[in-house]
Amino acid sequence: MSEPGAPPPNPYAQPSGATPQPQPQPYPSTPAGPTPYPPPGGQYPPPPGGQYPPPYGQYPWPAEQQPKPGVNGLAVAALVLGIIAIFPLAIIFGIIALVQISRTGQKGRGLAIGGLVTAGLWLALIVGAIIWAVMTMADRDEDGAIVEEGDVSTLDLRVGDCVTGLRDTEDETSMATVPALPCDQPHEGEVYATFDLDEGEYPGEAVLFATIEERCLEELETFSQQAWDDPNISVFYLYPEERSWSYDRGAVCIAYALEGTLTGSLATQDG
Image 1 (cartoon, rainbow, N blue to C red):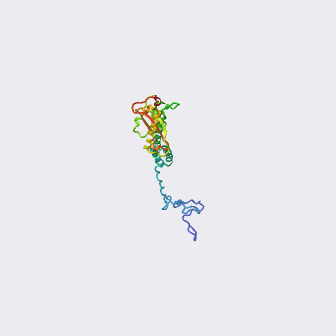
Image 2 (cartoon, rainbow, N blue to C red):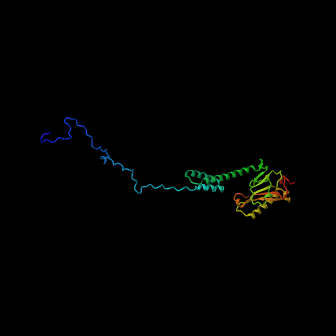
Image 3 (cartoon, rainbow, N blue to C red):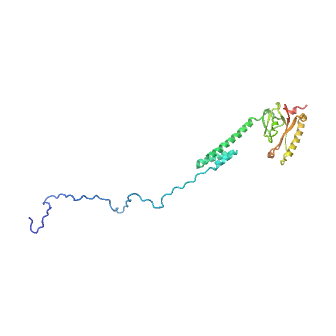
């Protein structure tokens, strides 16, 4: 029993001298959650869910499209020049165009190549014509006499040259070459005179023909009296045209047989 006036004993008190035993907590402790506020001087953590979208007006615009390159002008020029046979410029423009197209991406590669091809064809044609002319040209000996048949330019005809094919050219208005051959072979005519007309303005065909015909008839009588008297011999002459009058005023007189052929030179047949 306790003494009177003393506080009532603790019904749950442990006996004196006993070691206190730990008491279990009535409820488990709540785990520590995130700190509701950042520490002083720190940064606010990013909001959950990622970044906010950019404000209006800040979306990037698509890049402006560059205009498509057009057709290269030099490529067009190369093709046109190649077609009209101005092949030196066509070759130059074509090469430059290909370089520009490879650098800029322009169109026209086919046009440039076409210009080069046409220019090459013209060049090959001209070179071939020159080679053909050289191969078919009449050969002369050291004295200038024709020793092998071939073509001779009308500007290169000389006195004593024997020619043929004149009857086939009566309807032609212009001749650049004439077939020539040694005089000991059958031929149609022989060159017996060449001369230059007086300088000055082009006199016109009527005056020109009259002047040349008169001069050629005089020269024939001097060259061969027998040819002058032969009714089968006529005069064929070559004359300069108006377009070449400034650099060519030469005339050529040819005695030719109206029928049959001639053999030998007319100059050696007199008496």
